[in-house]
Amino acid sequence: MLRQGAAPFMTFPPLEAYFMSKMSLKNVQKQKKKAKRTIPRPAQSRIQGNTAGVRTRLKKLAGQARAKKASA
Image (cartoon, rainbow, N blue to C red; front, side, top):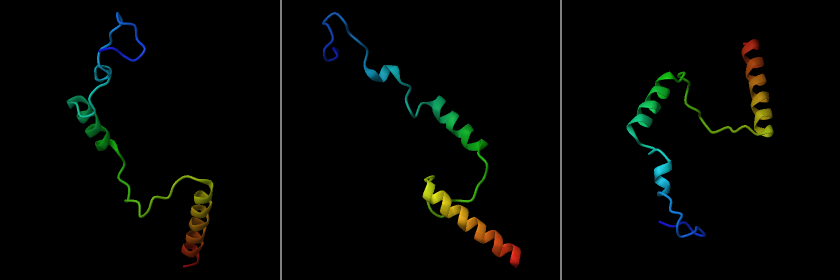
């Protein structure tokens, strides 16, 4: 197999040879171990993001919720 622009005497193995399969047994086992280590968290009700505007809004809502809880 010749790559574009390569000299005829330079041959390379296919690109798949350089990367491990995504679903190899080793990778599946690694993903399972990682999944087992995760901290249980409640599912997100919506994707909130990490932009300045979203962070400001969440901070404001958290403050309002804290004040509401304190007054109750």
